[in-house]
Length: 202
Image 1 (spheres, rainbow, N blue to C red):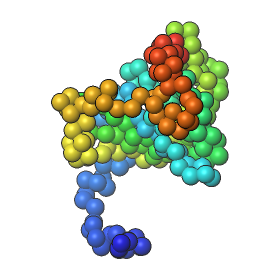
Image 2 (spheres, rainbow, N blue to C red; image 1 turned 180 degrees about the horizontal axis):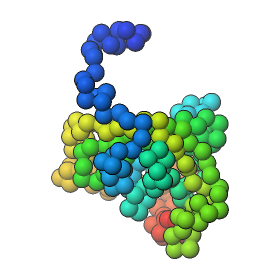
Image 3 (cartoon, one colour; image 1 turned 30 degrees about the vertical axis):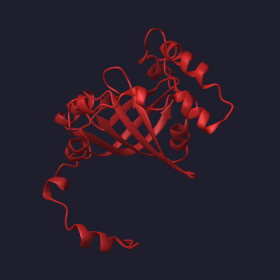
Image 4 (cartoon, one colour; image 1 turned 60 degrees about the horizontal axis):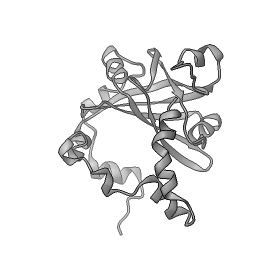
């Protein structure tokens, strides 16, 4: 296997980045970037810690983040599995990256910046849904923000319903858990999951 070992080798192989790849990067939200991010109900959040990297899916009703100002976005941490890998990483290393998807759009948005985990009562209270609140809010300060060209989503045909995978053709969550723990009761887990999820969404 031939492996690239230096940045110089990589740059020689790929050539210079196009002008649009450079000029699209801003250090704060433009009105247009704000519009794209506000339309996104889903983002992947990457963090880093001493043990390595983590990438976590984040979703919310309507917009996955609230824009506080042109340099700050707020992400409530709703109920999950309590592993809190992302939050543990942020507490130790504030660097974060967000990749936003907008259903139906092949343009994605990216934010690179730093974050803190807030337990400010007023901030947490401002995200109330059905009388419930997130335990924490991730406050992201933007270092750079830009859009990603559509090629990846076009190649994947992500929004093409004719390419959607039939869920019954895939392993269930219970089956995946049983593969990791042989005596796991997958049938009970799968049977209870829909009701449990509905009760613990927020």
